[in-house]
Image (cartoon, rainbow, N blue to C red):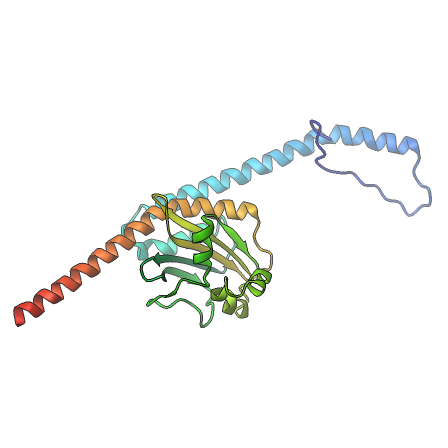
Length: 238
């Protein structure tokens, strides 16, 4: 016990029959009282060390994200820094086109997910993890059993199972209250993620949302400018 909470247990075993007496139990109880504080302090130190490492990695990601307006330049460094926080074999950042009900890849890294990898031309939003977090507005762990039990909801993740991507975290990308995409990490390790990992993924998504949104807007403006220039050239040639 430490401050009224059970933090660990002490177990002693012997090959002898009826090896222990009430006196032995009393001595063991005294030992646990003496070592409880040390165990509690060691656990606290580990938690503090883990928290400091997480905050350092998040700060590094923040510096990387704002270091360039060209996302293609920063994504590889972003992926490397993310390894300090989450274990993964694949990263996906998707954005949503509400008007067309389509989802488009902004960035992918790592293990190929098979034929259902979203092409640059996009794919329909229904049946994707992006759609799932768009509606839930919160992160989720997606397991193979969920994909099997809810085939319509997670159709886009089926082929990933064939590629041995067995664990997935998906979190929404939100800007000014609007879900405009999703950030996902996937692992070949079964049951790879916990609620702590969702919390970290949500913090990462919070950091990258603004930059991904701005990049998407800039790309749309550039495309509109290109189309306008083409129309102007056609008009001048007529």
